[in-house]
Length: 346
Image (tube, rainbow, N blue to C red; front, side, top):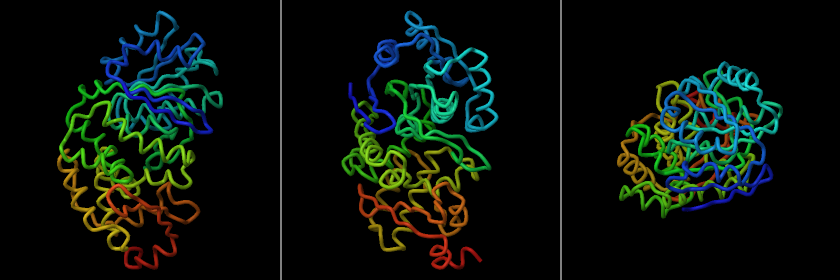
């Protein structure tokens, strides 16, 4: 077992990383929740695999109910959000009841947003069952839904009261979904853990220790910058361009981040910020995990970047590697971007 603790103003909580921890959910919930009613949000793919196990563990001490939604990115929408809130209210959920996110990134983002907004906030606990959600949405308190064909453009910060990661859930993932999560794991190594990057070159088993190494990067930046105003922005490495192509070309999130990382490295090299060796090293690691490495010209997507949620009052925060395992934030205004890349905007 490995354990991390996130300490932020929005609430401190533990991340438990342990094989077979799903079988001990009751114990872990009792440590942080003293009321009776629990509501689980999951999807129609995860429910047949894990829902009965979770309910059987919890029902000796709690009254448990659940809502099941269709799987997939399309469920991360206002329509589904309204439907989930309606069903939870019909089931008599109260402000002090616990909501559990059981599933992948869509469930984590949606459940967190429901928890942040229903009754102006109810506690929630995260049980991420995909590698992507274990690396990304379950940690750090970012919640949200897609809107206007843009990723996570409506959302809120809401920290969970606990995160339970069972690495054995990864064995139920198909190869593409597993590799999808590797996109985020590789990103953590790229921006802040060269030791992790070196380990990934040997294609190790993704176990408690590898997950711990990866999430240690996220823990560090989340604690420095809970609300994504400074250091935490480095976690967006690969996302600025990745979001521009994800929905457009029907990539999975981690796949789009993989391509976005290469696009950001390419731009960083052009700006004399990024060491040229970063490109081939990251590209080769992505290939090990069968992640896409198709070359997209970042200049063709600068217009899309202007509409990304990382455009803050006309300034875009680009994340570039300097060296492997080291990253920096470079702020470029829309004016600077249009002047530097005049041909892309005319």
